[in-house]
Image (cartoon, rainbow, N blue to C red):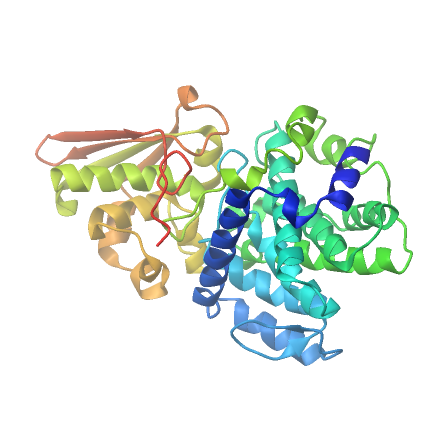
Length: 404
């Protein structure tokens, strides 16, 4: 903890390489764009109505909707909008999103404090994102907790503490206080609950509250990450790599490893989508002539998003987290876009019929946790077959998109 706290307390904007700053700016723009696009997604309006109804000190702005509410409430609303479409950045190696907890926190804290410069804001965001990514990369276990939320709570807390200018003791307590609130489960993903898009918002709100409590002198656990009941031992059963958390601190900023998402669905669906689109591009396969589609991917992707597609309580969530649905959209429509996650498109009979023909299997050679690999095998009614394998997915540093 000492090394992390010393780094956060001492790091200034001028210590960050210019290419890192420029990347931070791009991801800020991307994150705000997906938040604006997601403002009307299920759950967002309801949260905004709720936090406005609670009232309180007008500290921070709710984006798109307007109006000011207490900073924890603004963060709750803004982060939900940012993550609602599942269109925000991804750290592919750790299966998490970084900016959705950090950026709303930074904006709210800057508005609350009022005298924060652009350089101070960028510095805090860069450091917060770096921490979220380092925590996620250090974890060696398969996904069980939603790391966007668990790791994001610490990133949000560190960001808030940095903007508030807390000293090292209060920074340490900020992490201890937020640890008492850290949560985020994968069950809501599997069950298709709207809380999947809200968990980073809960993390961001917790980070704001933690920093404000620490500022007032509230203390928390001190050995937050490595203690007997610290984060890595309690949440990740001790399966972590300390070197990945600490090595290159201040020289290597892990936010540079983030991907920009080309499709508004879970990143674990993207390798299969890319493979399907490549088959469409090369072979012009007629969806009506498809007999069966088999997708091979990692065990984690198969378990999380590879089950048979069914529409339950929240159709948009069901579609966002389904390889059978997203692959069928790619094969039928030749692309995967925001419109494909609106309810009329989700209920399209042609897509649903094809989705029932999609089977997702785990390929041990692709690794247990990888989300960047997938193979597609298509069999047609006239006994033809097509296949394609993907090992680098669109939007990743290995296969970057044009930012424009």
